[in-house]
Image 1 (cartoon, rainbow, N blue to C red):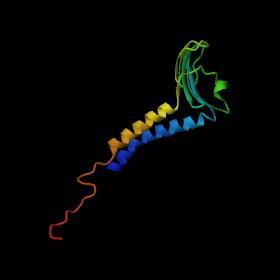
Image 2 (tube, rainbow, N blue to C red):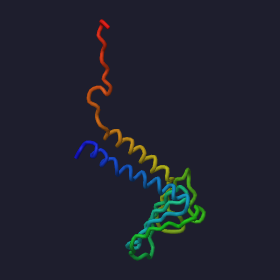
Image 3 (cartoon, rainbow, N blue to C red):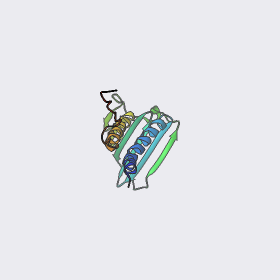
Image 4 (tube, one colour):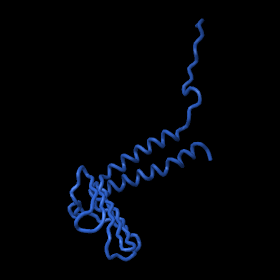
Length: 142
């Protein structure tokens, strides 16, 4: 595999992850994105609404089911009844259920992935051999 192709194969997963996070961030302002799964009495879901991400896991009388992916157009943060956050962050167990909830602003994974992309880009760029722009030294008699 050529050097340039190898560099792009290494860069592509990081660029795709950044594109996915940015698209979820933008889509969260138009509604709620939800991905959930129930198994062995536990319900886990990840959601995004109004620029906030929500990771939640709680216990209850749930039977195992297939993963569920939904987009609820027009839903707002107020409709989703998220607990109050401090600067967009929250980690705890709300009183409404027995489990754990983590809320974070969606700019955080975007910034982390931008930094990671910058690092990967710098580490996979072509190495310059010698001088990039060689300069000829003029002789003394000219």
